[in-house]
Length: 169
Image (cartoon, rainbow, N blue to C red):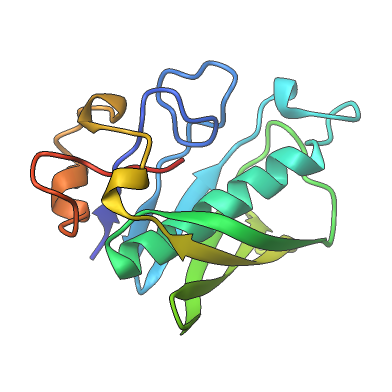
C-alpha cells in the first residue's frame, strides 16, 4: 500500500508552487519513503549535470520524510554525509529511497539512495535528525498544499499541539 505524504507551497524540494524547486512528491510504501525525480536544466552545475547540492537536497528531504513518517513529528537535519557514485543528468528519471535506520536516544539515523531508472546507484547518503517541539516548527497549515489525495499534516503528525500543524522542509 502506498501513502502519499503532504507537501508545501514553497519548499525547495517539495513545494508545488516553487518554479525553481524540485517539486517532488513523496510516498510511503514497503517501509520506505520514495519519490521519482527528473531534474531540470536549471538544476545543473556543469552543462547537463545536476549540481551536487541539488542532489544532496533531494537526499536530505527523503531522509527527513523517512524519519518524520516513523516518528510522526517534524525534525531538523543535524548531520549528513553524501557519497556521489556517478553523475546525475538533467532530463532523466531517477528514484529516491529513504529509510529510518535506527534511533540513538532522540536522534533518528537515516539512509537514502538516488538510483537511475535502470537501477544504477548515483548517490547515497546517511543523515541524523533531531526532533522539534511543536512550538519550534516555523510552519502552519497554510504552508501546506491542500491535496485531498495526501495525508493532511494534522493526520500525519498527531503529536502536534491543539490547533497547530507542525511542518518542516
